[in-house]
Image (cartoon, rainbow, N blue to C red; front, side, top):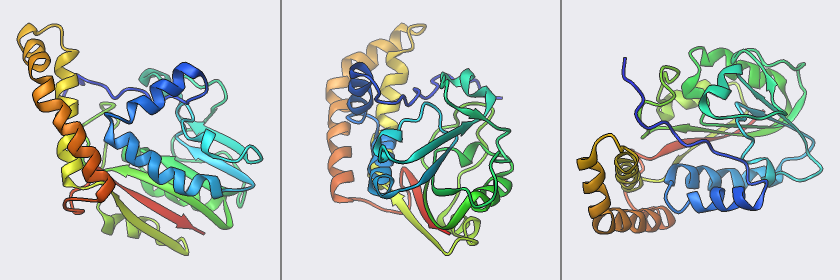
Length: 245
């Protein structure tokens, strides 16, 4: 089994001045997080009533919801192992959502389904706890390394995603970024993995020396490609599913 050399950085909530700097500053370099944020921001402010955040982690997108929304976040008990510590989280087994039928008006589920061995049960549970007319946003990575080892099981195509959410009255699948963003993201990860690899002085030195030459152009090109949707949409960073029951 592969050993995880560079675990994803926890996506923390921007609930303090320092965390706001970390949250929004990170988006200068992390195209996965930036593209997810852009898509969640389109729908989260429209949510009303009660909202469930499935696999909420540190609830990084709760701040996009109206203060009037009744927010509930659920996550698995091993989330702490991956640097997610949320005292307000409701623990569940990763499959069976601990709420009654027709409870929620909105659903948020970001970068979770790839970690679910039994994703069919979780998707059916999301459907069950949604009220009629409930809306939701699901994000899933496509161009992402093997992460949170060994709890990383799937990468889903748009065809599969359409089938997964076919029980909903609406399920729109959108790409997040293009192949150019995916390439630029890989370059950023490559450099930061080597910059944090102090056990190998040579790779650290090479990453440090070539950062201005390769890393900075990759970041600039990535932002331009994301803003103008330049590149192929068939090999994106990931996918977003907008759902309605």
